[in-house]
Length: 165
Length: 290
Image 1 (cartoon, rainbow over the protein chains, first blue to last red):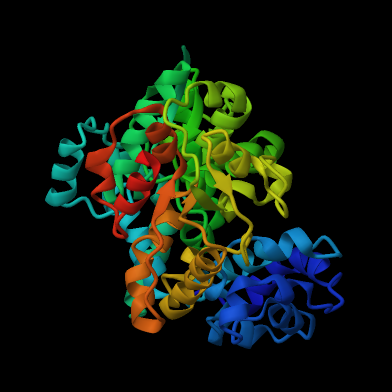
Image 2: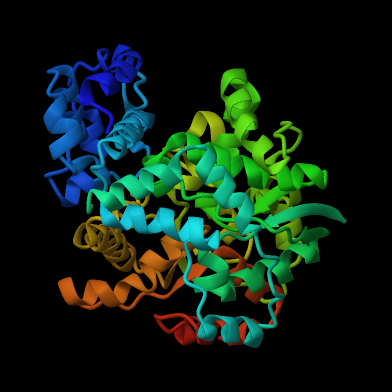
């Protein structure tokens, strides 16, 4: 398993961007998730990073996965911080520490096994026929698997499974 | 005819295929030819990028390579696919180190990203390539009297510096596109807000509440229906109203994806697909028929 300290080295470059944050809260003000669910607060995510509260952020806290990736915060940040990108980087780090919601793991496995995130049922194929839609050319699964092995995604998935996550 | 590689994605063909047929029937009427290629998942800009950004870039690059090898630009049916493919295409064209890294992985499958094509969303093809005037000229049955709440959706607009489609804080293209069909675009509360789909996988109650807030806003503005250019937003709003009814007071607002309404105004028969909507669209069809 990758140790947190090693990962934080990777994170240093990102911190150069994060440190521009002066906690104005414009991100939270525009965040559509925060409006419905105040536990997820992009300003607090940035605050934790500024305070160096890394363990909680990266390992224990799954709040970053609640971001809906709408990029409203990134568009509005007066300091030009791409907060959506910061959150994506945090997610990538959390995955390396095997802190990832089961739904995301299932999605990765579906792509690895079928090339698509959709469940292709008989009933949907009948629906396609009824609509006179053509059969779609199938992706070469061997190519998808080779690529996911090469990038290390397959290895990450098996480590997450082993850890029983 | 202008040829495009047609990137139909996962959600449309295997969840709401009645949207796929509307694009396959309307685009050729404007001189656009669609070519199917053995694409895989785009992949998803939320989940897959969140899992591992390098894998996300690499799998997207494979899809871009398939279109490059045919010398075809891509038109996407889905806004999520559009964001992924356009962002990755732009990153790889401009970041030599990343391109070298990704091409190292692509070598395993004997492919190489060149950076020779462009990626467009179908709404850009309608608005920017075909143009409002030509759309209006095709209208046989104007959608007069129909009040529509437009929802452009996040993945068509942001990140704006890369996607460059419309004003991310005040988009107007979809409004102009529905008005070209004779309908009226009505302002409503939280018009620009996200549908919530991105958080559905980890926090369904919040995702439902986010979509509900929009449906209520549209109903209060007396909209007859909501229209979007994104299949994921469509699912949130149409199928989602069933889930909303468990948390909130029941709503009953029909939802469309733009080419359905375009086809309707052009006199193309999409009745088989309209029956597949969760919220019944019959009242809208009756209203248009007058």
